[in-house]
Length: 255
Image 1: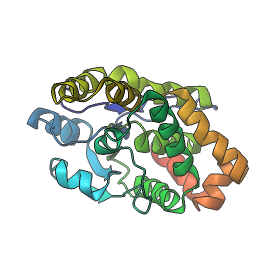
Image 2 (image 1 turned 30 degrees about the horizontal axis):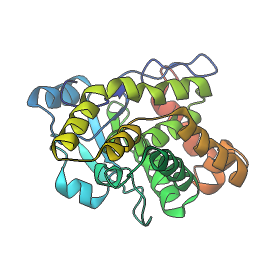
Image 3 (image 1 turned 60 degrees about the vertical axis):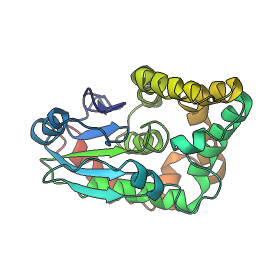
């Protein structure tokens, strides 16, 4: 997808039982604000796109709305809706003024995504949204860069699908290779606008992912809720039946 940043199909990933995620079913990406007609057609016709779930803030959507996709449902779930002073949009990243601050900011953001009730409600809605797609259609979820809000959403869905943690991290870290061009363009624009060097270095950090960020999410889940299974069931209220439905919908030959 030439005009969709950080796009990937999670199909082909194997879980612990050797089952494979179905292709053209579970899709993740960055924002869909500059999608070409060709890529729109590819998603609608080849991937049978059924639903888009947008995890950005209302302000982000106002500034850079998604393109309209025919015959596709659109759902807005603001992960940071009731969180003050934190976010993972471009404007949030531009307010970080040093590399050390950037690393700490990102880790704190992942702590927030784990424990904040508003963020938890958002992730619950993401999973519910994934369950409400027709079985012959695909589900695409995204935020601004497709790395943090999207990364945690992918982590939770892959955990439900019983994917090994090392595979979850591999998918999470793939963002860095897939966002090189887009990040370079953002950095070049910031330099052209006269942004100072420390802020540029901080922006470079904020625009990438690091294993320590996802480590922080898992650490908070383990410390506060007793592990990812308890987190999904007790905090997000994703029942065993709902988790089985996710597996039925997104694992190949699982029916």
